[in-house]
Length: 166
Image 1 (cartoon, rainbow, N blue to C red):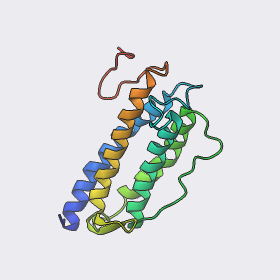
Image 2 (tube, rainbow, N blue to C red):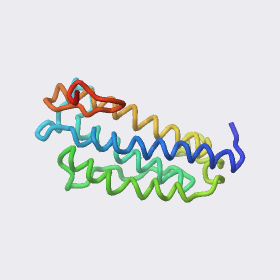
Image 3 (cartoon, one colour):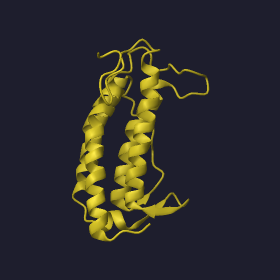
Image 4 (cartoon, one colour):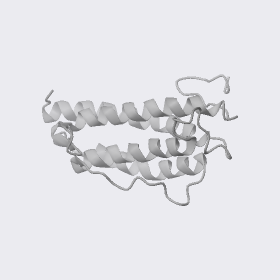
């Protein structure tokens, strides 16, 4: 599907406001991983909690930065040595992702209407990847939120109160 620059800018504005709204919830879920449970996973095939939290945070920044650059490149997604807890991931996220979002808010419609290469595997509009990045974060945030209570933590409200916040 192709968009004019004006259409792309309008839709991007909506999606970026959704990102901004979802960021507070994502931060709460990342920070809710109980200390001492970072290696917990519901099944041996599942991603451990801290690794999943890092994936959510780092992938969100990667999606936003890649759209701004007009191409996706494989990068170093390794977790910084200082990140040891969900609270550390939440702090990194709160510091690192908002500038990437702010950068996109300043871009013209052309940046979202243009085709963007995804690691040589395919091309789609920046808008497609903006929506995909948002869905990716929300999907994995739901996955991580399902880990929290069995780990002994309290699940924060996501789209309303949770059983732990009521």
